[in-house]
Image 1 (cartoon, rainbow, N blue to C red):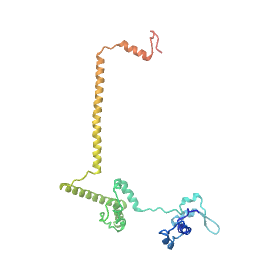
Image 2 (cartoon, rainbow, N blue to C red):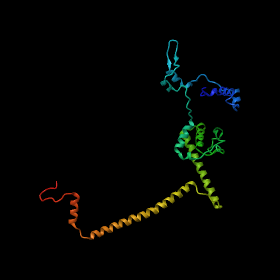
Image 3 (spheres, rainbow, N blue to C red):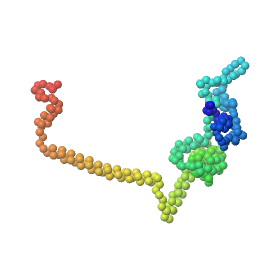
Image 4 (cartoon, helix red, strand yellow):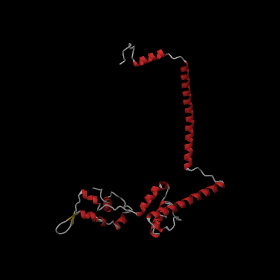
Length: 265
């Protein structure tokens, strides 16, 4: 028995399994699916925007134009029955904003935080700041769309205006947080170091270790160089034996004794 069939035959196969005894109990979904079976689409629907591709597949005849019922592999490039790619105008604004502000992608988000803010249409976007939504890049997108529809500005002007409001609110939030922290510290509150400060501390610790090691190695190099200079100075004071030097050169070059009047070549 071939079990690799479509999802539409799951109910029938389960019924056969129950009758044969392969399955002892009915699944929880068995009766609801039996009472409300899934609808079957026997015919594949071609979207209206793909009629240009159908014209290319048209075959002229005497009785009228017919269409190919069996497509060749080259005909599938028209994408007649493929799912349509969804395109939204807001996505272009999102791409521009996050390309200009990549660090905003590091802002953590959670489903609990956005539980009541998924439907942005119910928000009042006549202002940037919302009571039930966190200030983020989506605020800039929705505020830009509102400005375009209600203030008759171009896309660039609306985006720049929304971005300016976003910067202003960001500065206000950071200023408020800094003032609150200073007030808490004044009354004795102690804050732990942030991850950025902890990273600076670790970096400083390693730099200090490398500094001590570099100083030690520098002292060793200076001591070796001073020893070499002292040895060279002692050799300069001693008399130079020219015959010994020329004899060493002859041995290295293997010239030997060359008679006078003859070249070494």
